[in-house]
Amino acid sequence: MLQNEINDYFVQLGLFLKQFDTEFTRNSTVLHNDLFFDEFAEIIEKQQYQNGWFTKDQVTFALQSWANALTYENLKNWTKPYEFPKDSEPKIIGLILAGNIPLVGFHDVLSVIISGNIAKIKLSSNDQQLLKFIAKYLTTLNSEFSERILFVSEKLENFDAVIATGSNNTARYFEYYFRDKPNIIRKNRNSVAILTGNESKEDLIALGEDIFRYFGLGCRNVSKIFIPKDYDFKLFFEAMYEYGDIIHYDKYANNYDYNKAVFLMSNFKLLDNEFMTLKEDEGYASPISSVFYEYYDNVDAVLQKLEADAEKIQCITSNNLTKNSIPFGKTQKPELWDYADNVDTLDFLLKI
Image (cartoon, rainbow, N blue to C red):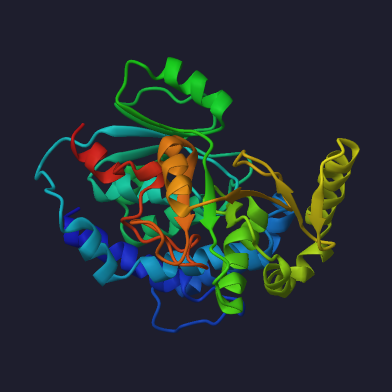
């Protein structure tokens, strides 16, 4: 397949996914809707039975994020800076995908296909259906995708390079096992917000999206805030109340109750609004339903700390306090060129 053809197929995929928002709306101009619309609607509705965190709202949010990303203009802007070799033999790229949020590994699959290579995929047990369905849709658009997107259920073998995502513990195993192959190994990362106390309520409501989207399970979710010494939490908590309904979801509520109890038994001082806790802590990885906070004397000290801890940080959100700061409410809406861990996946694949 030529580069322009591949782009066109993913644009068609974006149009297909666009139909599955909060309400499912069939678009008669979308290709192969007769074969796939009803089946995908049923898969989405049943995701929560497969993975309790994959509610319809969270799954459709992920689908809309991809629908908005997969446009001709975005694909063109993303691929324009790269030089794509012509008539080169495709490499087999092993992909070990995470399953913490819906379709979290799709960008790696997309990058492999766009670079002209073959994706050999080991899915997470937590996200088994969505990507397989997308592969089936793409294969109907062009049968060559059946040779470019492969799934394995057993041990991942016979590949030229690998991209693997896991915890810090599994990353050590990956680094050893894949040491003789070109690789990208992704570990645990967290995202942070830097507040000055001058944020509007609208800013903080948007920050709530960064905190609560996907129940806080993603590496792009804000799990820690940096605040000035005299910070008043009143406006912060008023903004967070916009997300109070999250406590009515049993899995989240169970985590809230458990983590709050653990903190209290350890005699930690907490701020609590009955659906989230705030704990003063120098760490980054707060548990579900909790956000860590750390006071600062000046912003420069925060920036120095974040630079020193860069390997632990995925995103920084603020009102333009850092060079690569993401606006509040946008951490879970990355562009195609916003690479995980700031590692240029497409450049890596094109140089193998």
